[in-house]
Image (cartoon, rainbow, N blue to C red; front, side, top):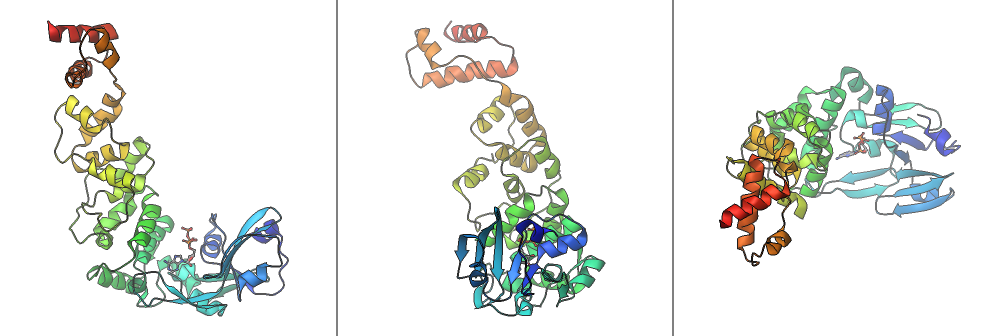
Length: 364
Ligand code: ATP
């Protein structure tokens, strides 16, 4: 953890601590993407002495500064509570003790701190033992009630590290999932789902379904589809892999979806498409995510046939060509071009002259 060399802070206060994922990852010998540093006290006041402030959020006591060209995030120690269970917490105190700060966290393995000054690991919750035993343990019995997104986070960590839920934590999870009141922040649920499903892991999805974690999103029963979604997503690059997983749940109405995400779901045909022409017309204006959902929910062979072959077929004639042929513009144009498409799907080698011959035949 050489960040202090990178950002070049010479700290002697013993009030700066690496915290959360970065400490966990270092102990697991893994690379961390972001480095969280907590200051015991008010980080905004503390950081005022360093380089340029990039942004700060006094409500949370967080600040980003530029130190010698490096952007670094600092957080003040803070304690939180959940007056509205399942919704965003409120900050009770900025500048609390390190212990109070770690007690607001999700799992013991994410509640470890390491002194920047001395390198000492501070473990108030048994995180070191749980790291050794590969266990995910929440810090108190109300943890999932306060913040159900921790269940999705637990799934992510369990697959990423090969850890298991500790027995008591599993019981708390099952209890929560068997009696959900759906009064929660679905914006947060969506954020965690995006992060978790973007891992593109069939294993994650199997646990998500088999352990009933999907019930956070919908009370409707969901069965594990036979299609291997990970393989499908690997075979066809998509921008939004998460929606291919989430879309398997028939009801995403609680999630705040973007227009694009909603269209991906709405475009999935309800029935199995039988002909090449039907497949082509159904998907020609849809995103690949829609076709993958069709593969999972309806017909994998048809979907792959569309993606591998049909979607690359394009007719050459256009409305302009029809005009040149002396055909008056009218809604009939669509029928004519569709007929050309039908023939081209049967025989993709048709040249533009062959296509014109198809049109001539129509009027013969
Ligand atoms: P990743 O490697 O996926 O980024 P991370 O542990 O660094 O994992 P972050 O989402 O960056 O995860 O969160 C940083 C830290 O904040 C966590 O290690 C944990 O201590 C705390 N944290 C994050 N989300 C929650 C939550 N929903 N409830 C409680 N603590 C949380």
